[in-house]
Length: 202
Image 1 (cartoon, rainbow, N blue to C red):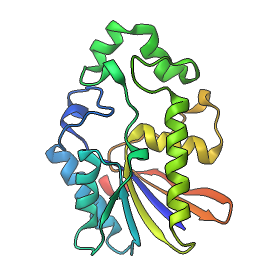
Image 2 (tube, helix red, strand yellow):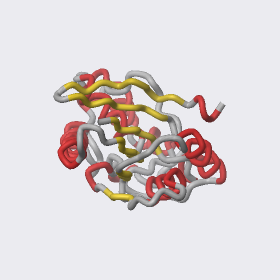
Image 3 (tube, helix red, strand yellow):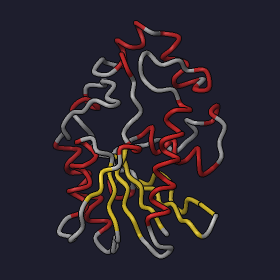
Image 4 (cartoon, one colour):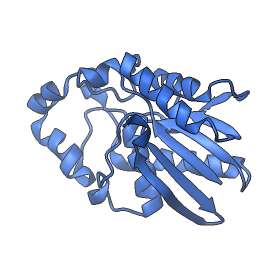
């Protein structure tokens, strides 16, 4: 099985540097254009299934990439973006000013991050792991799937596959909008054969 994993395109709140999490904002013209570029890149790929986070920005990106393929987009709640609680809708600068240490821990010491009404990293990893196992169980060994999700969710998949400690959760690559990773699954072995690639945007 191969799972093509991408992040949604740029949104209005991404552009305004607002924390989105479980809240949503629409794709910008750039976000739509980047999704179309990824669509063009993936045109030769025959997908058996398309999965997306149920949040609008991920579904809209998935619809663009799907193109005229006769496939239904399956929305999987386990792949929603991490909930940021009280931070959602606020600018990065505002959150950093109001919750300095907690915000720094989020990026620099995720193992001790204490959310303000949202999720911690262990809770995120638990549901992402459940979602990934569900996709693998549902599919056949030769399936090729597309998964359209969010930056922190993709980082969670990386952490699970590579068995990273939380201290290394934010290791490169950076999760640009519509970046592409490919996860190959053979029996019990999971391995990334492409990581965070944005060559279609350049």
